[in-house]
Length: 97
Image 1: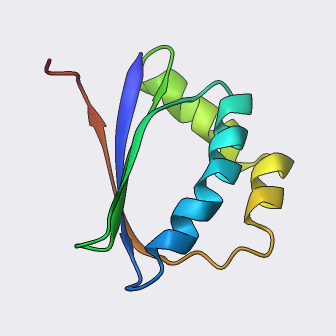
Image 2 (image 1 turned 180 degrees about the vertical axis):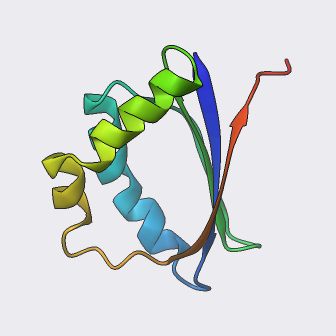
Image 3 (image 1 turned 45 degrees about the horizontal axis):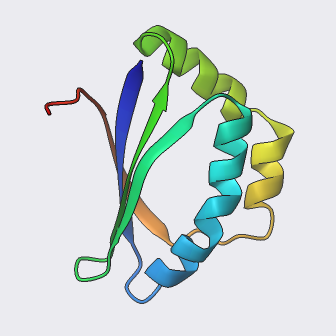
């Protein structure tokens, strides 16, 4: 399994809107074989942090991301949604506990 930590900087005052929409995109990730391990809203710092995993190694993860990114389901999930994310920090992580 490969896990990716995704930390999003969000426009001030917009985190609740992102949190409300997030299950929409999480469902699409699920359709493409990803698992959302955890998701947290950090209101104090206006950040949204989540971990997504996929079976296999990093190359397998990247191939699945490419399929997901090109999918009509993902496009539909973003249709009409003006993302408040201003910056993304992405990294592969390993479970320490």
